[in-house]
Length: 310
Image (cartoon, rainbow, N blue to C red; front, top):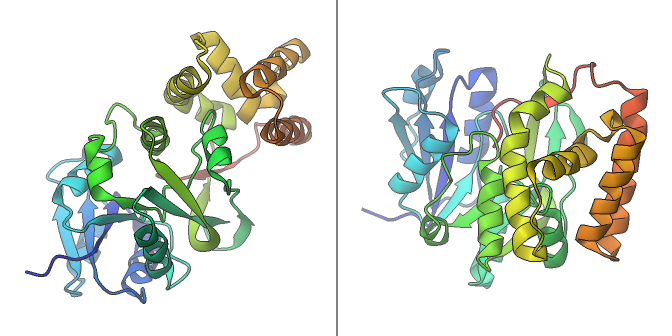
């Protein structure tokens, strides 16, 4: 049996109308030496029937006997993978370049210190219309500094060394929403290199959602602040309490809801954490812009949200 170089890992739960496009974008890659491992997580919309109709020999389909969630499904896939590298694709996203695997593999193979290489990504809406290119830090320093408050690289489209990821025991299953952010953070704290590829190779789909950004935040804050605290403690030797971490999360993601006093306190904390550096100036500009735009566009309006993101 030939061992493929790459395992493309996709988890599917009610993939719906976007699943065929996502699958085809993987099977159409110029680089051919991969297996396409798909974990179907006991959905109810007919995705399994579509996946069972695929006859490409590179496809390996595993159907979970019961729904276990995306994080556990990803770890299941890591255990089943045969490739030396793991490439991630979600069921509603797209490899927008047919050279996605080929280009990332060249970067990964050129330096044994790289643990993960991630491409830039375009954001698209439910109809596939382009909206913007997602911001990705370029330098190793900026990747590290961004990790204090957010995932520093894209999960979708990333190419990882399987043995390195498994050495950290894969994804932490206590995280349901932010498992990718946690994984990247643990890799950085363990001294591994994360690299952002400068070209857009994948498209990440955002969907209309009736929940407000505050409601979304209430679900993700406990996970995000737990990771933020670990990163800031490790790199800056600061022990922040729950209230302080929550204030910092609000500052970075929903600054328009903060009172003027809370806003000033948050900005002072930001300066204390980052110190005088170029990245601090950039972060402060982003926070100020979000605060102004958030007040002009109240949070009760529908945002765009990932449908099954981690």
